[in-house]
Length: 206
Image (cartoon, rainbow, N blue to C red):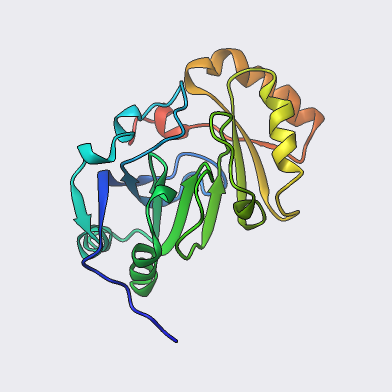
């Protein structure tokens, strides 16, 4: 049975903007970002802690969110957070895909998967582990490296995703001077991994 999206469904939106994807496999591509409020993962180095409290952010309808994306030529909508999977995302992704817009998500995987996704970027966090159900679905595994011990932890999750999943190591921004050389050496020794840099921070776009 074909169902239609409930366009009156609301979600807390911290911010939304048209920019370039700055990280991972789709780095450099035009993308519309929708940052949802709410997160219970609690990364100490999080650079969007204002997103954690969902009640602080306005609730927009699915129709409003899709209309913002459609005002741009963006082929992609990236749903991020916060932790976007704290919210039911079926209506949002269905409406976006009905409008011809590809749906990407950036998630820690700490909550059950909802929504229909063209690309799932799984970025697991030590503070709250991903649920097993998302591991075989991930198109991209992106592990933030904050400490040398994180390499071993990254390998733990690399062993659980599909063989087709892209593997990325990304320096934590405030530690980038210290850990980027370590990542370079690690990728050279373990070429199944690739380096992901937050290029949006270097070129000063959102």
